[in-house]
Length: 345
Figure (cartoon, rainbow, N blue to C red):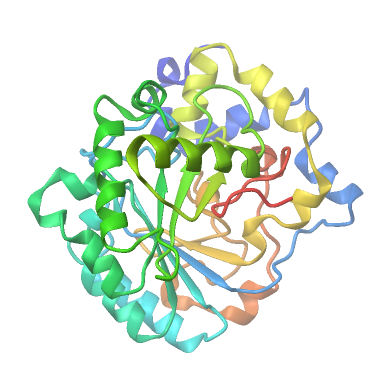
C-alpha cells in the first residue's frame, strides 16, 4: 500500500483516513466486537468530562500527533466559541472536569482568560501542556505560577526518560527543554507531596507496538527522573497511538499498518471496551462542533445527534446518543485499554 502522502494530503483529509481504516476487512469489525458484548449501540454513562481543543497551533511537530498540530496551523478557538463553552459548563453542573488541549493550548491568545473563567465555575481544570512551550518564549515562562494559582492539573507528554528516544519522537532538543520545564513545575510545587498540585506524564510508544504495563513503567520513570534530574511527578499514563493522521501515515509508509492493526484487534479487551472514555466525555473542536472523543474529532465524525454544535448544547439528547465507532476504536480497547487518562482495564 502506498504512503498516504502519495495519495494526497491525507493528514488533513478525514475521508481518506476513514477509507483506509474501513478497508481493514481482514479484521473483525469493531461493531461486531461490541455486539457480542451486548454493548451495541454504545451509549454514554453521563457527561462528566468536557474536553475542548482550543487550537491546532503548536510549537512542536511530533511524529505521533493525531491532531496534525504544528506552528503553521491557524485554527484557533475564538472568544465567542469559548463563551458558548462557558455557558454550557455553567448550565450543566454534572460536568466536573474541563480538559483543555490543542496543539499547544497556551498559544491561544485567550487561553488564560478561558482558564480563569472556568475556575470561577468551580470546575477541575486539566491542561495538556507539551512542556517545551514553557521555554519557547519569555511570555510563557510564568505558566507554572499561573497553573498553580488556578489549581490546574498539568498533563504532559514525555515519550521516555532518555534523550534519544524522546527527541526521535518529538524533535531535537525537546528532552532537554522538557526536563527544564518539569523542574520549573516542581519548583512551583507540582508533583510534590502535600501540595495538591497534580503533575502527570504521558507515554506514547515510539514505534508500531502497544505500551507496556502502566504501573511498572511508572516506577521506571519515577526512579530514573528522580535519580538523574531530581524530578517528581504524580502518575504516568500509557496511551496507545491511534491509527489516524500522522501516525497512520507512518504506519503505512513504514509497512507496519497491517501488522499494527493485527496487534490491536488481537489484543481487544472487553473490560477496556466497557470503560472507553467516550462514554463519559464530550469533545469540542476549536470551531465548536461536538464529537464523542478527540480521535473522532480528527476524523470529522461528529456526534450522532441533532445538536452537533456547542451553540445547541442539549445534554439530554447527548446523554442518550449512540456513540460513533469505527475500526480506529481498537486503539482504545487493546491490551490494558487507552484513554486520555491512561490505561482503563
